[in-house]
Image (cartoon, rainbow, N blue to C red; front, top):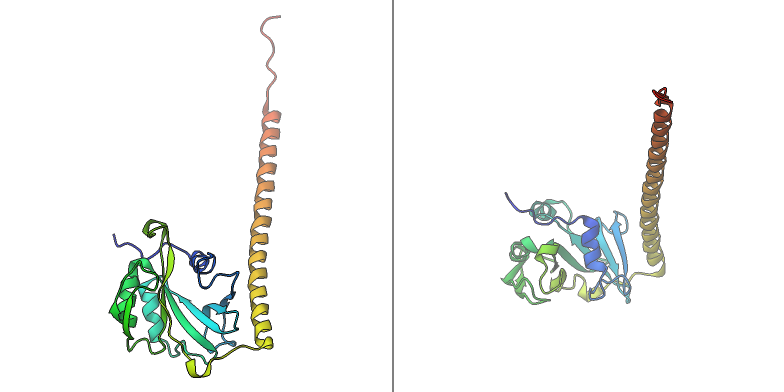
Length: 222
């Protein structure tokens, strides 16, 4: 049986990338917005990271090789004048294969920024970087996520810095994501409460039914 590239869900991967203090995309040091739709950029972004300097980094998360390859068959690329850097985040089990698709060089899978890149490949015109993440059973030295190759600068000659209005728009999008999540949690809690009430009522009906079915047998002996 062929082993899956990863068993992690999208939210778990996002947390590995942005939820730990060692990460360059740590949420306490950056503004990180998930699921940025068309409009702000000329394409969708899984994660958009706003640095303290108000520059933008996109992280494109891939969980399978077929999903990764599909990215190169789209009509649009990940280039946008607003972006400074682009990273692909991929599972450890397919990271070496992805490395050789994106770069000419020597892959070192468990090294922080340790792979040797001679040059980006023809498939990687914008010098995308590489993030590697692991399932629990694949973690190396206690690490489950690291930057394997640093991204090149997409617009080095004319770096884009977002303005106040754009930052507010991203904060609005982040607020929408937070409240959508809270709404989902509230709906699950409401449903759990309804299910619990139904269970209590069903149990009470069974108790009442058993009480009603009890038969008083006459005593055979006084």
